[in-house]
Image (cartoon, rainbow, N blue to C red; front, top):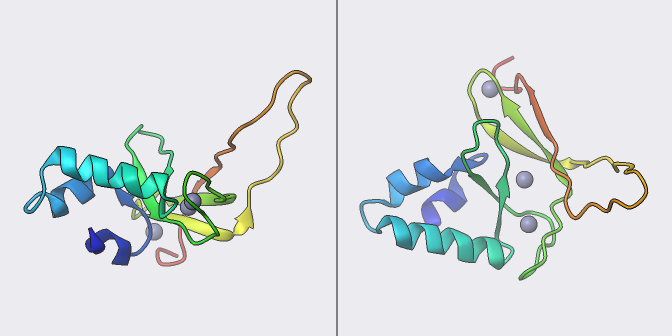
Length: 115
Ligand SMILES: [Zn+2]
Ligand SMILES: [Zn+2]
Ligand SMILES: [Zn+2]
């Protein structure tokens, strides 16, 4: 599974499956990714088309506890998803009675490589 840990940006579940598919079956790939998420090694990124993307955790994530309070950037030209580790998720003010467990911010635009 080393392959995707070395790749730039985030990787789609389908891409990982394709690359790992020669050596591992789908279930193994899925379980391994799930284990990585549980262990705080990678985190999932929400996408507009509902496919799952994964990225390496750079913040201090530990087993069962993620601290990835950064936003994600999706380039509409090359479709690469970036972890913007320096950009902290803005605090969302919720109405009384609501509490947020997780806030996902995905920004869409043109990345620096496509400028
Ligand atoms: Zn994390
Ligand atoms: Zn781009
Ligand atoms: Zn991220």
